[in-house]
Image 1 (cartoon, rainbow, N blue to C red):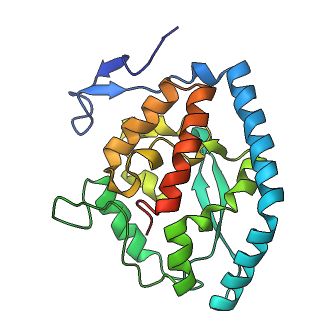
Image 2 (cartoon, rainbow, N blue to C red; image 1 turned 180 degrees about the horizontal axis):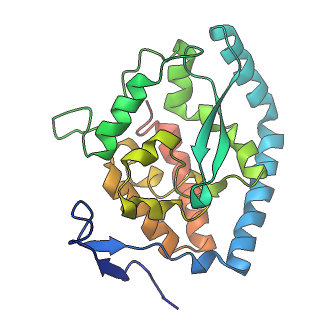
Length: 240
């Protein structure tokens, strides 16, 4: 059994010229057996407790979204989860209802292919000026409060508190084969990417962080990432 698949790689330069010379492989063995069971138990206990404690806030946010513009309170989108299985992904709606996704499709292509929104040294790898976003939506995104409905995804077993962020289905069309390694575990509400720079981290570095997280997983690491997420969210670091 591999101790750490970060060190495990296959030379694929001749087969996949666009992939890194060393093909990073995700080893999910740490999440088999008791490891995965403990992670799931932590998800249920903390997500369930959060829903109970935050229920007044969730109600207030739902009312604010409802009053901000016509349309539903929740934005439901198909995302890709563990082993490339699709699932309904929940967020508070932050955009005008039934907005065209062409802007995000163009951005996703730029991001995955290595582009950013700024040519200076202060690069941002996120769509920072989206005309579809409502006034209350900008605040929700900046504070990451729009992500709170994913607590229900966690209770349903479609997501975890910590893990790689789930991509949109059309983004997979732009993935190189090695990028799919990040999809071998349950996606998360937060993760190593969020506490390592978030929107200032380019796509391929994000994938490497996700694979490193999988290969080095421990319950202690999950707890550390959750604690590190709190100041990132409070500062609004990388939120747009």
